Image (tube, rainbow, N blue to C red; front, side):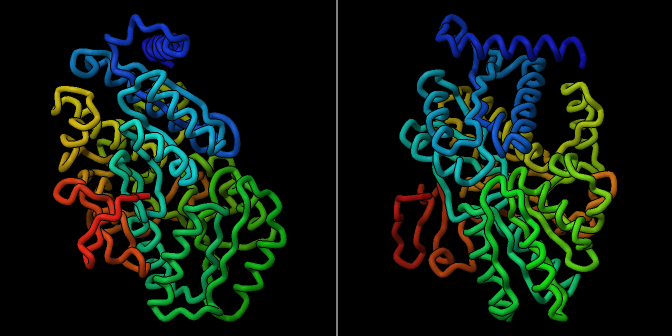
Length: 429
């Protein structure tokens, strides 16, 4: 690790500690950035890296002079993969530490837990992970993929390019997999897939005994039709799941798995040699060649002090979100949430794959979609991609209760305007 990086991080930790002790002397001279990620518990495998990503971006911004002539100060809290604790920690960030913005959450259940707090206290949350859609909060900027930017294109690829006819929808038992699978089930049936060709399975967070479930998947896939697993399994449960696939010799040629929550970070804890050919659908892969990505990887390795550390999609989402927020603060000339939010609409920042991310009036962004095949070294070969960036949809076109709903915080000032009744329901999550 570079000496300057270490000193900056020590300074950041000290500033955060000062805030935690209620020392207010520095408060007027810094812009506080809340970091709300699980550093312990089942989601620590994914979220700890996102905490480090924000610390790196803060350090880089401070080296450039900060924002509005002030240095940025990280305030890091650990909600410990405990969903009610996410709400407590977000309130702590907004009320006790008076942070100007928060970057955080991974699971949808954690985001759902903090939404009432952010709306009550008019905070601003940048959420960096793919999610199920069906939501547009005035106080959240969604920089991860909506279903039309990940799940639907992945199923299209499996159906059109690989000829898949039977579908296993396997997920962790909470709102993101259940809602995403409702959308996918409706989408598959709209394409003529029958009930008997769809198998749905849910498991708890941290599930470890996959023997019988993988046996069921093998049996389901032995009906003579090409079969795939669409995985919305989250957190460290992915490690024993993939290990059991390997133990039971389920190869990508037999039953390919396309995952929405497994990237380079998760694969670094698994022997990827047995998973070659399985797939992930994301908006970024570390292996994509672009000047922006090469610079980001170089800076990440320098910050973290380890050239073996990987990058992944949610890190890119934080990169995009942080730069959108920083640009909006400069444009607004203040960190006031209402003024920053107004300044955000229509802003464009580079993504890491050579394109541009644009903040839309529905609080989602434009993103390219990539399908990647797992390599033996834990990286991905891109086998398919969209022609350009896809605008994120807040509400699904395939669910009866959603297809008439529109989110527009610029002209309609509403997250769920019904285009048939011409009314805003008001409850946006």
